Image (cartoon, rainbow, N blue to C red; front, side):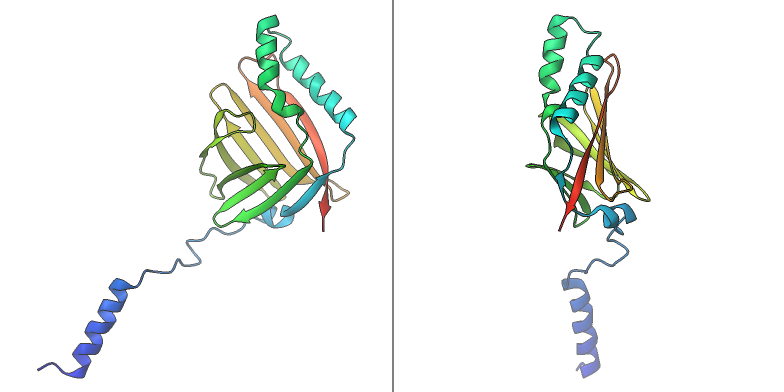
Length: 184
């Protein structure tokens, strides 16, 4: 006959096997300081006519080496750069970072591991994030193009989104910056 101790030991062993483990704090990635600093909701604060002209000039320079048909194709594929994100939301979402621009949500792991997504230009892409002390770097890597967006605060406390897009098919990069005010 088994004593009460044996029953307790068997019950404790069964409990360890049957109860799922709870993730430890070591398994949950730490929130990068840049995410803590920049998390929030922002509204576009620039002058769209001026920003749009700068973006268009950058696009025109980048596609200047293409023939008329190539320019038309490239211009249509680059149209997402001419859509002003009036709202940007930066937030941690579990083990991921989420940056929402209007209705487009870019979610990828805080670890920097690339994630397959459909980019803002409706093309297959890999999305990843990297972090500096006070800056979030967002990378979209597609078949023929790469886009890097940096998010940081200027001296007035406004969010600055700087975009650089490159492609072996373009004469040079497309570069522009947009400014946003933090919303309460």
